[in-house]
Image (cartoon, rainbow, N blue to C red; front, side, top):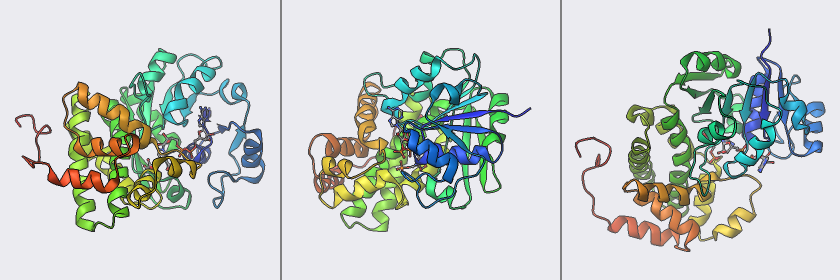
Length: 337
Ligand SMILES: NC(=O)C1=CN([C@@H]2O[C@H](COP(=O)(O)OP(=O)(O)OC[C@H]3O[C@@H](n4cnc5c(N)ncnc54)[C@H](O)[C@@H]3O)[C@@H](O)[C@H]2O)C=CC1
Ligand SMILES: O=C(CO)COP(=O)(O)O
């Protein structure tokens, strides 16, 4: 019997994951705008977010939430983090019991500081919850370039069952039981990607970018481990893999924000000019709250937060970072340091 997948949120990534699933199993994509849903179903195109890419004929979209959700066997949430809870509360009315919920969202909720999988457990308790994450720039995947991701779930058997729904010839899906680490890898790399973009915008070199990525990984690992992630997870696809893709790709929205900040534009004008989400901007504030609470040093993330929310310039941020003392490179990562 076919497993029916519902994907909530027809932005770049929700549409891409729905396209992957539709090649394997009946899939319905929920879009907020009826015109977009109609275009996806009839023209097999998402003109708002992915105008240059063909979608599978089998992919059906609707703007009717009940129609998308009522019969689904697997629910996939692809709404940005600040709208995630509200969207899931609307979905909950129509969701059958025990349907697994997979989050694609890479952010933390302002106020509660919760990960999306924690919000799922709060809003729809009893449903198995997981995250699909990794170095997955949407447009590359739709263009047919090979990529790999991780399906992270506590329950390995459910993860294995879900793996096959998204897998394709060019899309490899691994499993991992460390939901906390995998989810935080995806969240935290967005903040570091803003820093990498800032360096590029300031005209820094390849050595600088490599230093930001590597020291950024140390910060991600420090906070990720303090919050319960497994150390090895941060050198996997959801950690280092996604960090490299996002810090180096011209397709990354977070890196793009950083690059424009580095060139001297203000955060407000950059955000106003984008029709897509750059999760790292809002998440940077939540990350610094968590770092403070957990006694984690995160100097790069702190500078990103200051540039995004306190009016510091990218040049001041980098000047400040260079003046810091440099101790052992694994401090806060290796248990004995
Ligand atoms: N685009 C990419 O390559 C990847 C994105 N992600 C993550 O996936 C999540 C979604 O990102 P994208 O699809 O790229 O974003 P996007 O900016 O392309 O689209 C966001 C979608 O969510 C909808 N939306 C926004 N607020 C909403 C609300 N309050 N209620 C219902 N729907 C709402 C929008 O209408 C739009 O369809 C983000 O957390 C992002 O970090 C993860 C991996 C890859
Ligand atoms: O998460 C992503 C790639 O894995 C997408 O990154 P951006 O949101 O910065 O585009």
